[in-house]
Image 1 (cartoon, rainbow, N blue to C red):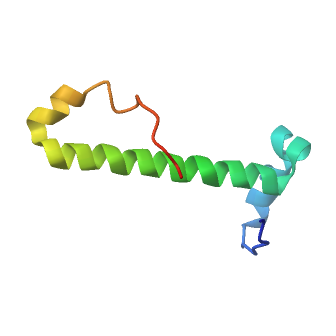
Image 2 (cartoon, rainbow, N blue to C red):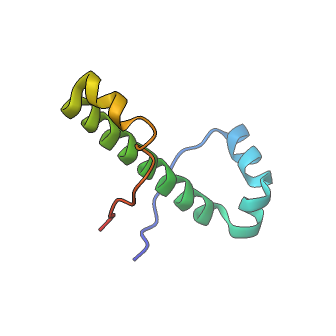
Length: 76
């Protein structure tokens, strides 16, 4: 279910956003939904990485180097 929301955006930023090719092709809402999903995914991955580093400490951080971007985390 979609819910309409009101947001405030600087006029110059909105003009630049509206000139973007993907925004013109898919629409503002579709592009903003994708941006929000990407933002939340990135923050979740960063939180998981921080939790690993807190849990394993400095020594564990070396062990995990290169692996933090691997794996598929469930989102449900």
